[in-house]
Image (cartoon, rainbow, N blue to C red; front, side, top):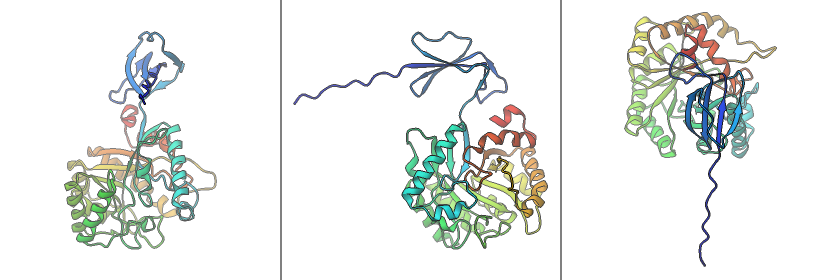
Length: 343
């Protein structure tokens, strides 16, 4: 039987027009932009140019175009409800996967074209990579934590020894993760976990970094506790998440530690942005520390630290999966200019 030759139709061109364009690199706006798309590929970006013959024109009037947003810290498995942990526990993996797809679509509708999932269950986020109609997904799988430690219920519990940590990193690499996520301190989502306490000794974090780098993977760590931040910096970690310098009764950020974070060019993953929900207020212990956290974060920015904006989307009603749109104003409050905040 002779095979039938089938030729897929070439996608038609689409031209987007608007009043202004921010290209994500400079500090100025481009007037009267024309962005030409060939299917899903951007073919040309120009100012005041004519539209190619045959292209479908989408005129957005006085809108400003900008590149897709990147949310560096999300949890697609959490449903942004009042009890995201309990809701996930009641779902099968198949149900959780469908919820994660809905969450990713919500993020996309909010302008997010790339997300980094820093904690799921059973490596479910890996199955969303490359899926049509979703943002680009970078996945960490279950975060590595201690037995009974922060988010242990996601399946990443590991004994706090160098040997066990190296084995956990290898397991994650074999599963195909894009980044290793470690819970270096406690967190509020886990009963019995304390944010001001470190979960792994510095030498265990160093074992994780060494093993991951040998496997070509970066490492980022959930770090609220001052001791956890210091241990992660000593381990030459690639990224720090939250970085709130939480102590038992307040906030304390030694100047030498601020300088080390900046000089080692460790990426500071600030978890910013929230949606006001009537009747919901942050816990009193958070509100008491908030001025100190803001002041310390400004010091990190002023020291020249590498800053990345994430949201922790999914962990509660104030953190829906499209909450990234509320991050630029928060960055402005830390002293960044409009263009710098968007970059």
